[in-house]
Image 1 (tube, rainbow, N blue to C red):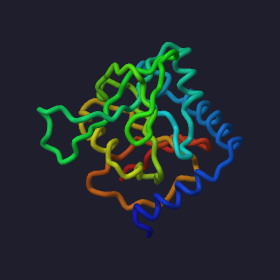
Image 2 (image 1 turned 60 degrees about the vertical axis):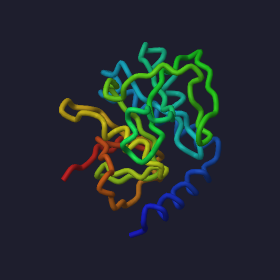
Image 3 (image 1 turned 60 degrees about the horizontal axis):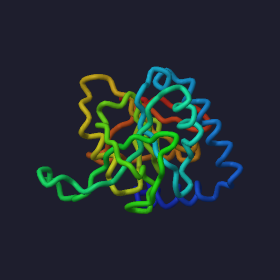
Image 4 (image 1 turned 90 degrees about the horizontal axis):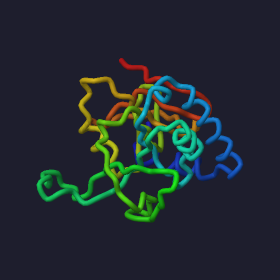
Length: 200
């Protein structure tokens, strides 16, 4: 079975090969599938993302969420506070409010982030939508390799039920050998269907 680096390179190439028309249709289909799901209907606070490098776009869903009065938050990469430097990395992912009128600016790693940062703790979110490079039916996920989402998700108290869902093109489904630190998803939303994780 290919390792994570080989899988990451393969899937990134495949999704970047999708045309603009294919990406636009996929985003619309994804929006329909997520908007009909109970986890979205119940949610008041949602973490989302701005698509890059061929990721499936959540723009139609974010627009719909705002119309329905839901609060949307986007990831921001910040320096770790001085009191929390036990881990090797000096950067941490947090989530900032994104309003319809919010201005986006390019920051670390070329990511678009809200210019005005208004943070919300991830464990306060009702629905967490995670980008990914690859996924499998067991809820395993391969990300971009920085580990930001895994570290952010590891801080969530799982005693109360959380809805942590991956988001990707259906073509990104691929066999995965999980690493010990990987956080298992509750399922994955794709343009072609909703896959609830098959827990063992």
